[in-house]
Length: 294
Length: 294
Image (cartoon, rainbow over all chains, first blue to last red; front, side, top):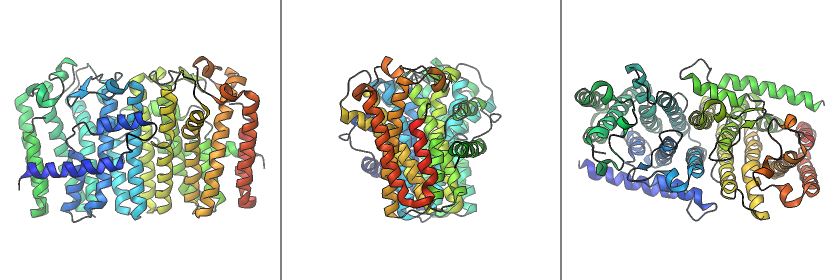
């Protein structure tokens, strides 16, 4: 398997479908649709939607049905980045090599573009679930809502914000990473699992794998902020250190962080391999995440 | 029927259920749950959830099933007020006689509290729909998502924001009012209609009634900003004029605005009365909205 080429193909499929699901820039009021599209098509890796699709496919589910939920998850991910970057939160000027949404469109439109993407994601999923009268789809939506919600991503964001500039303990950093990043990765795996008709046993294995992958992904992010270049990341490096962000690297150092990424990935791969040969794509994808440079 | 007493009873039921659906203030991280509850329990009229419940009841649906959707709609309404009040948008310090969310909790937490309420609303609805494997519930969620989304409330908010301080024409003001306020009132009626098992004919009548009631409601709001007192409204009066807001009153004057409220309400009542005696509550409720002072 040429995993890079396969990932690229999936990304393009996701992009085409996102383009169909998002209102055109010519509709009224155009500025909000421009702002939504600006951030959705800013060069994201589409990791989360690909996880939805591939988990569904591994279990023998209908990948075409899964596409709407996969794209909705990417919209939710994008809304969270737009709001994260706002002056009242991280106050970031650049993301993925471009101006952040509020720097390009103004703070008022950026807040509304985030709201719009979150709302639209659920509208897309509700439309899909109604169209097929799909209990699987409803369960996927439930998993995504839970990952994005007050016991998922939002909780992680809150704990991150209230500890800004403070030194946190290991348990708090763990909470932030698990909720802020891993919860949505879990949401992606579980949504794909439900769409694939997973039984309780499969759901448990996938949830456990997802948590490990989500955590490894966030630690790798922390590492890249120190070891990456601005060209690779599309944003200023060492921004965590400058913003006195609590990261795995600041708490444990580079070496221990890299070891943690390797260990978590290996554990996740072992879990995924319980699904046999059909897990090949997800296993290969997990292994590329460790080596990513952005 | 003592409509005021009946409305009060429904409000209390909604409040009790909202209290059950929202995470406790003692959970971690408590600040977000405090912020969510601060605005949800700030003395709202609960008009939208009551419309969901009563429309469902009028059609003979399961009011108990409707309660989760009704409360979710109120959470979405509350999120929209929190984000509306932010410094980058309306920059309001008071709402319903208390400090706005960002004045009480800070701008960062207010943005996240809005995000949290919107996410939680969909989590609550997805949970409800999965639990009962309810196509009616899915359709209710779809109607609410549409009312709140990029072709509903968010679009109205965007057009309002981009025309801030500018004189708009009648068509633009109409768009703002129909989307910003009426779309969610329509969402409430349609959600209740789906939960009550409405057929196409009933849906059409209710959509038309909802649009009229939503528009009348917003015009009455514009009137009260001029004729009300700060004690009644819980916020500074004449704020629209000061903020150079485009309102029905500024465009058409008080007299024509009052006549429009009366006409729209009468038309809505005539539509509701097509459902016979069972429409008594909704008819009485519509008539009280014209006379409201806050």
